[in-house]
Length: 160
Image (cartoon, rainbow, N blue to C red):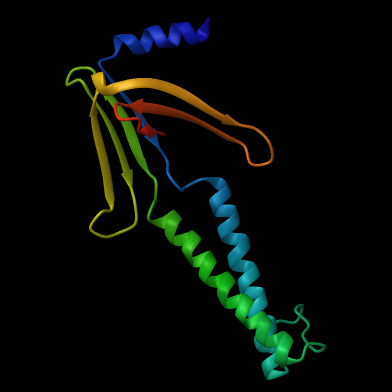
């Protein structure tokens, strides 16, 4: 009943605009912090084994020889820090932020997203409303669940 009222309310609107927050989800912040701290911990332990001094007291590295364990820990630390930096850049640059707009005045559907900096940072797709063939829902249950609404336009292209 509530869904029917909401659909009728949307039918009266001439412009329907749905904004998307992009990469600024709590889970991305969580993983950026965890990966950055883990990478920093591995790097500090690897460097502590090289200098044979505990750089941080609670990270004991007396039983770790630099070659090969300390060297591998330094490598994992650098990779972890670079991956954490990648996550932070995605969050700061707001990759994926944008909107979906359905404009009945002009008869167009607009999909706008922000990408990585450069020549093609802004992605803007415009389609006529009469080009929309179908709207489908893609549901995948299990460990890696996925739920998406797809708009199929003429030519068989499905847009999420």
